[in-house]
Length: 400
Image (cartoon, rainbow, N blue to C red; front, side, top):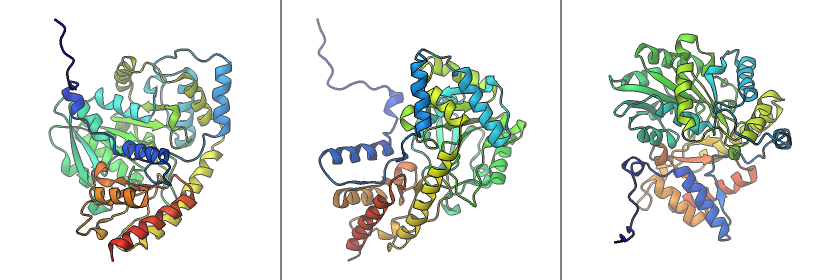
């Protein structure tokens, strides 16, 4: 006898524990509103508004013409790996062996591979808050326990002392993101080294998410954990991406740099999940690393100009507090000063701004920090000005 189809799908316990991405949800809201003909100001997207530079696109087209459309090794083509190694030698005087390098389908896959190949069920993973929304979900998927480090008192600047206070016998790993999404904070090199010395002292491991590596504004310093001494780098996986630096979000190409044994384990994960990353994206990415970096400098300068306008403009709105980020392309203002009988959470603030003023921001609770919202300035100055006007109008209405 044929069984009747179930009314609901029996989602696995592992997947049922995962929370939807608040950043992708905000992006989808903006898409749906535009499709309905609404004039939307979108501060939700963590995506450059620049197009991929022409010389990178040409490299992919030429690779296609040459027939580079087949499978590649899971770890990436030799040319891709050579380009990554050459880039780190040139930019940071850091040497890696081919066995320590692998291509991934974006920086997110590098982080996913690193976590699931290292932690066991019940292990604790330290995650500074605010955090990128996927960090705790990847840890949960792996069966480990995310332990959050609250950094609000230090202005969202992670310190070695904060890390030390959270280490327990069950701690296995820490995930560090500098420049940070969503706060834009940059960990000073000396503090980063002190954190890694703690990692080594307690027999732990670390993932350094360097997705926004080159998007750092003076006087803050561009710093890669690749420059750490060998005894510290032996406990480190560096997750890199072309998405933000080269405006290549849709290409889905990134890389991992880690000790050979860790890389081998990550390759085993990738072999049975995605196989190799896109062959044409690899061809384009190696060209991005090998050729002039002027396009990066131009985009960084434009982001800095937007930040320099946006932070003072937001700070002038009554009830909002906004510090100046040193990197990435986000500000993370505190909106608790406008809370009232109608708005009691940052989620309610974001919802009202969307409903009433058709402006998308991302609720800070999704990043582990209630009372704040993330605003992306990866958009035009004209859009920023209009969005700030709408936020100001809503706040003034609330204060009447």
